[in-house]
Image 1: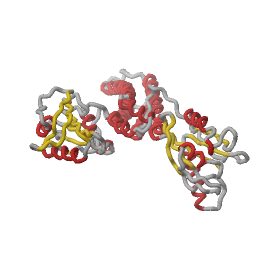
Image 2: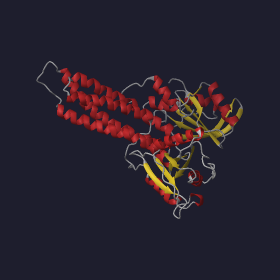
Image 3: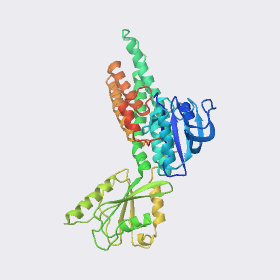
Length: 427
């Protein structure tokens, strides 16, 4: 944290490139290579000048000044906007390192923002999700988390849990006075059950969050030659899957994605389901059944005279039946596709703008563990266990929730490194 770090914050190949510097010597180091002394420059100002290597001018650029704590990292920071030449950008980085900077590691700027209290851990992870967002839905999820949606919800739950814990701890402090009871057990049980229901609800949103973040999985299933591959090609508007009159052409699942009104759908074209003695084709059929079980939406296709396949549908799956090669629907000619697209949109889980959705697997695991500890608290209250045993489980619940935001505890270095190593350099 005492080092001054630098990195390219934009992708190579563009018209412009931005180099980011952060740390205690940011202004001093920049002044050594910039045509102006910016050591006393006002914060939140932009300065035009030249980057120099001795007497040689490398580039003309704009330099933005951010003073601690009012910067992304919470430290003194500088952003240099240069021309996008690979040579120029590399030379500027070399100069900065020569004059005292260290090249930043992946996600190190955002890690410093977290360590300096500019954001909590869930917000820091949202930065990576925002960069990786590829649809309106995934962008909305990341922005909600970045603005503190998850943090606010968990902070409210932690406040309720702290009330529970403090009442029990107070009883323990006065354990010599058996007639004193600061925490009414029935009220504690009611509050614990309320929190438990809320954490359970949050955990259940993970499936929706994953679907919106990574794409709604849609399995196209049916007997051979009913038009599954034709439908996939029509939806993608390209010849992605082989179409043939020969049965058993599709012997493995084929995946591709499209966006419909900002929602990503992941389509899986599966092998035709029928009885076969062909070992390879049977493997494809087995994978078809597996894909159908994992999908959020099942497009079950048939044609006149061919029965729908017998595939079990789970309670939380949406089943859309399609009778192809009819007047109402012909995948080959695009007839009925608009209606199908609307049916797919109707299958997307509906969430209010204010609803908190969990989309991060690490957060989900922490909620599951917190739920398990809270179940022990509820059982302990039912069994009238001593306050010290219940209090220990409550502290565990608080610890699990703190794993999500990093609030109120020092997250182990290996956890931090695992989170931030997946960031791009410069962020």
